[in-house]
Amino acid sequence: MEKLNLLDTEYADIIANSDNPSFELQLVTLGVDPTEARIKTRFITLLKHKPETLEEWEELMSVWEEACGYRPSAENINLISALLWEKQDENGDEEEK
Image (tube, rainbow, N blue to C red):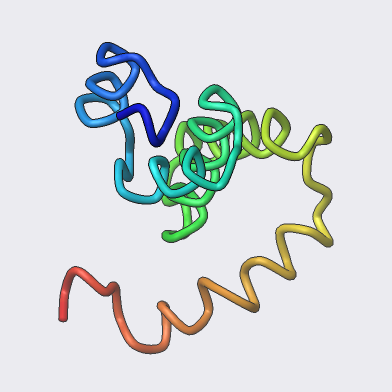
């Protein structure tokens, strides 16, 4: 844990509470501040699947704003949809395979 420059409690928090502990630890290893690593990990995780409910969309919008510093425009959403989600829609959800 010295290699990561994390306290035992910080490491345990990542393992217990991160959406993707491995990715978050990689970010920290690369020198990303642990708080920023948590925000970016959450953002990337939420982008993996197209939101289905209003609550999921609002969560994505909030995390996007926190991670990127601005609220996404319709154009941003359309680009993400074309790059990430339309392929999922064509092939079915990854978890259903």
